[in-house]
Every structure is written in structure tokens, then in C-alpha cells.
Image 1 (cartoon, rainbow, N blue to C red):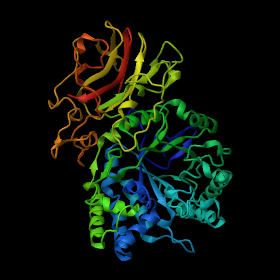
Image 2 (image 1 turned 90 degrees about the vertical axis):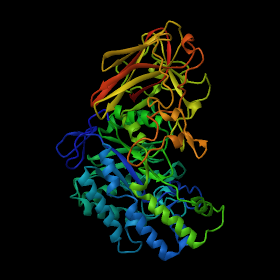
Image 3 (image 1 turned 180 degrees about the vertical axis):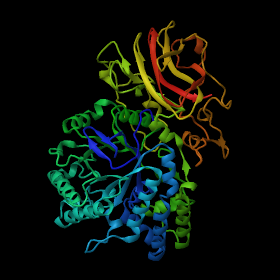
Image 4 (image 1 turned 30 degrees about the vertical axis):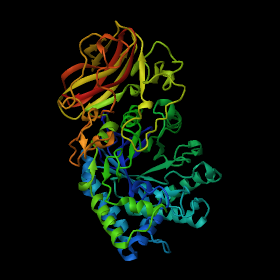
Length: 603
């Protein structure tokens, strides 16, 4: 990470716009979301219809293998999905927090009196012990409140209705549940805060919006009857992002939360949250963001860091993916389960279904997962790394960029920075989607470039975990035959690039210097896909890829003679970078140049 995050020590509390620890030191939360463990979500199993929420997944499992075997399935699932090994790895990655998604139905009995399911609440106790041992704060997130606060699959609602806001009984149960949680954990300083409701009320249920703040106030009052220490965390309506409901600050130890998915990552996109932070004099938290490509992670989480916003990556683990840190290997014949769950295939025989589900349970353990270190490396800007040009810093003109104009007419992104940002592959009237569902690589047609006119510059921040030598390269297209760009490292001149400078970087695939994603290797007689090449073993040793995005790295014909070609230029080779934060400053020295990316890769 390229900013200090503060020590994990003592109760967290709000202190003006900052979070501080028990010693009063500023702290920035960096963490991951523990989704799918205590509230299974269908898409994390590849169920997109039918079995889309906990109660329907439970029904599916019982239908396939019977009630008795289903009970054993869920016990093993809950024991093995998140273990000490997962928490240890999070700590090794430099994270300092987790956000635990909880389904109320998972931890309390359905009838009165309100009471714990002993084995379920015991797992939360055990998680808290692990997190204390490994120094990660635990945010308790009520992801599925009694009755459902959202009216969708994510809250386990029964009839796609926000029953919490339709039933006084459900409202009272929610308040009592939070009082019970606060009573149980009031002395646990490693519990970082209470996230009262996840994503209440999408816009189609906005008729209930006026109920949210009174409920937040009543929950907080109940918590404060038994717990004066823990931070209260509240989310806006409509996927946490409509903060118009925040009209009164009823507790000084409060943090406001928003979520960010599939959207532009610039200051303008979060300005309303920054404004509210200032208005309330309270810290803010990006409590969920992810489900995109690695390039987006570089931009999004860098944005949060630049604005001192605590963040949480969602989720830590799911089935058969490369855009979360942990990937559960798909069991043999899993498609049979998917087809039946979605009403598109016959019901597997019980013995067959049991065998498939047993393999799934074997695969969910951390040691049996595929681990993609590139995910959190991108989010934390740890080296080696490739940074898309458009994701220069967000701290403003004169700090992270300089442009001659105040506004760049025709720019597709960050228009008010004054730099022209357009698609790499020609001009287009469409807007970037900033969406890459299920892919680790940015869609080719979505790649952007930054045009730097003479004297204009951009700045990037990265972090090196060790003392190591790196090559530093840029992918650029010069608009002028005599143009040049310069790169500075931590304020000192590093090197320059020009159309005929002789520093073209075209190592041959397989020589150990160019990421293997540029040269797919045979797999079962065919070329691998980019996603296959990008995978990594659980021990973190990369099978390929140094955060490359699969872009062009081969020399176009007559590249050295043509200023109108995209070229990879090696700015520095075997450059020693010490452990810590570093800044890269890229400037158009002569003429104009389009910049696609800058990368720092191991020699």
C-alpha cells in the first residue's frame, strides 16, 4: 500500500473525518468481505436463476441429497469455507480488516424467545479470535436482517419484499438482535464496528425510505444501552449509495458507507460522498467494491487511497473465478447441479449429487483453492504492476497532473482534469462502461489512453514490498516524429522515450522478461485463454502474468521509423527500488504523446 494505514490497536472510533485507533492514531481500513459464508449468494456458486439466495440454495441441497445429508453438508461448509488459513493469508497481504456478512436467520432461531444458534454464533466467536491473533479488525455486517431489508436475493428475503420495513415484528427483532450482538461483543476491541444494514431498499422500494433513519436511530439507541464503545456504520439506500436520507447525525461515533461497482473511478464519481464527509465531519467507508477486472481495481482502490477513504474488497472467495483473490475449483460435473438448479436439466441421482457436492466441499478449503495474488496487488498498487494511463493520481492539479487547459473537450473521462482521454483504438462517441463482468483483463475496446501535450504530465504511486530491481516501461504513441517523453522516479530523472531513441522493449516471449500472458502456452493441445494464463497457484507463485493486461507488446512493422505506432519503450532496466512508496512522473517533453500504460516489472 502506498500510504500508512495505522496500527491495529484498541477500539476504533470516529474522530472528525478520520478513523482513529485506541491510541488516537489515524487508521485507514483496508480489507476484504467474507461473503457467501454465513449468507450464501447464488452467483458465487454459478447459480444465476433458481437457487439465488440462502433459503433456495438450502432447499436445492436438501432436494438433491436429503435432509440428513444436507445437514452434514452445511456443517462442513460452515466449518471449512473460512478457516484460520484464510485469515492468515489476509494478514500476509497487508490487510487490516474483514467485513463479515451475516444472515440473521443463520445465527438466531426463528421463534421466540430470541436466542442464538449456539454453533453458528460460536463460529463468529472463533473468527474474532483468529482476527485478534492476526491483527484484523472485524466489521459485523447485517447482510440479511429479519424479514429482509432489501427485497432481493442478497438479503435472503422470502418473497422479494423488504419485510423489515413492512412488519413491526421484524423491525423489533432487528433492534433486539443488534442489542444482543452488542451485549456479546461490547468488550471485543478487535470488532471494528457495527454495520447496521447492508444495502437497504433499492429505488423500486423507495416508498419506505423515510423509515430507514428512524430505524438506524433506534438500533443505535439499543446498542448504546449496553455498548458505548463500538463505532456505528450506516449505509445509504439504493445499494448504499443514496445518501439523501442522512439528515441527522444522532451519534458522534458514526461512519458513513457507500459501495462502488461497474462505474467510473474518478473524484467526480464520489464527490457527493466527500461532500457529506465534510458536512457531517465523519469518516466514510467504501464497504463493497470489486467484481471487475484488475485494471479497474488499480484505478478504484487508488482513488479511495488518494481521498483517505477506508475500503473493503468484495468478496474474498467464490467459485471458478480470477477476479477475487480466492477461486474455488469447479467440481467435476458441476454443470449438472447448475442445470438442475436453474430448471434446465434433469435431477442428478442422489449418489451422483453427493459425490459432486463432496468434491465442492473439498475444494472450498483455502489450501485447495487457486490464489490470484494479482487481485490484491492491483488494489494495493504493489509491484510488479501495470497501471493504465488514465489512473494517475486523484489529488488534483499540480500534485498528480498538469494540463494546459482546465477542461478537455471531447475527453471520455476525467474531463475537468484538462487531459484528453480517449479510447486506444480510435475515437468513438460511446462512453466507457467501466464494467468487465467475470474477466480479469479489460475488454480491448474499453482501453483508454491519455494524451499529453508538451509540458503536460501525470503522476502514479506504487509500493514495493521488498528491495528489488525492476524494469520500467511505457506503452506510448508519439504524435510527432521528434517527440519525446521523460519519466522521473521520486523526483529524480529516470529516462526518456522517443520514436527513434533505441530503447524499444521487445523481448522474445519465453525469455523470462515478458509476461507469459503475451504468449499463451499450449494446454491440452490448444492455446490457453487470457484468464487461464493469468491464474496462480495457492502458494502465490505466478503461473504467468506480472499484472499485464494482455495488450499488444510485439513490434509493429517499421515501428522504429513510424511515430504513429504504439510502441513499448523501456525507460529503465534493473532499477533498484527499495521497500516503500514510490512516485512515477511521466511528462511530454517535446511534442505530443498518447500514453496507454506504465508498468514496473521484475527483471
